Structures are given as structure tokens and as C-alpha cells.
Length: 231
Image (tube, rainbow, N blue to C red; front, side, top):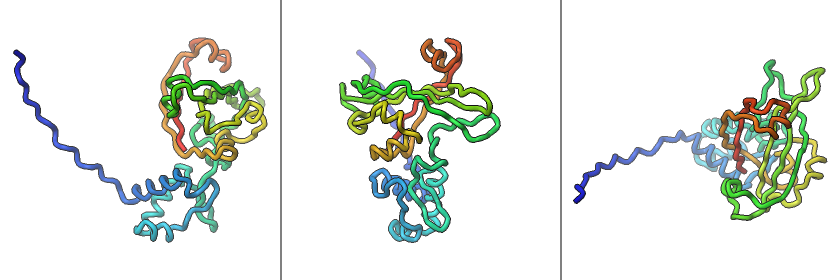
């Protein structure tokens, strides 16, 4: 007959303290996610927000400072604070921070490889919150770095999966005709504004097809970045 075992439960953890400005920052992000202020639109002044949230103007300023540092908001001297758009230079590569060894700004060119609509694979459907068998759009492209006097060389192979319902009408022709950042296209023509992302990074060996596209030997070390972007 099995012996009875006594268990001791740990004391409940005390709730984590969140500074007041972080709470205001969360409320501002919630308003952005809810579409209260559109990309490119000016938000209320610090005085108005302080009155709305019943906090000091300094608390609001600190919350806005963090969102500006994260390129979610943009301060413009004498004009106010605006919701960032992906058309602005500071946010074009918000989630892709490639910097040459000399510290200069990246000069990246884009080469579209494929754009197709298909049933989302199970893992993609799960990550995108889609139902099994629901449509997704797969976009594959190369990003090439152009050094002065040299031929552009591939540095990034992008495989993007987009939820089909939000991206009806996205075609290879539409992507080829677009000149700006991809997230700006999503924002301008599909009303989908990316404001944050979660990333995982790990080292992998280049598979044969990846090696050919990136112009490296098969088995060469690569960095794999898995990003999940949120509106």
C-alpha cells in the first residue's frame, strides 16, 4: 500500500511592482493597439495625457520618452509627438538591425523570390492564430548589401508568413512595384501597423537551397532569426 506523502505549498509570490510611468506606457500602447491614434497622427499633448491619466506631466513624459526610444512614437520639435510610421528612416529597419563593421547605415536592396497564397502549415497557423487549413501568404525574398564599388551580395534570406484574411490582394506584382520597406506597404495598403516583435536567434548550418541563395557553401554557419511581429 503506497505511503501518503505530505506536501508543503510555497507562499504566493508578491505581485511585481511596476513604476507608474511603465503603467502609463502600457496604457498608451493599448491605445495604439486599439487604433485610437493612426500611424503618422499626432497624439495628445503631455498636459492632456497627464489630465486623462491623472498623473504628473513628468510621468507622461518618461513614458513617451521610452516609446520614442523604441521608435513607436516620434517627437518633432515644435509640432508634437506622432505615431511612428515605417516610412520614416528611423523605423525602416526597426526589427532588422544590420550594421556594417564601419558603423555606417545599412544600404540594403530587396529581391523578391516568391509570393504565394496557400493553406497555412500547422505550426504557422498556430503562431499566427489561424484555424487549421486557413489561408496564409508566404513571401520569400533576399536582402542584399551593396558596398561601395562592389556588387551587391545576399546577406538575408527572408521567409515571411502572413495571415491570409488580413492580406487579401497581396501579390508578387504588387510587391515588385513597391519601393519602400515591406512593413510600410502593410501599413499603407492593408492597415496593418507593426509596433513590436518577439525574436529568437540561433546558429544553424546552411541547407543546400539556402546556401545557393546566400552564395555560401552548404553547411556554412548561419544565424537563424525567428520573429513574430504584432500589431
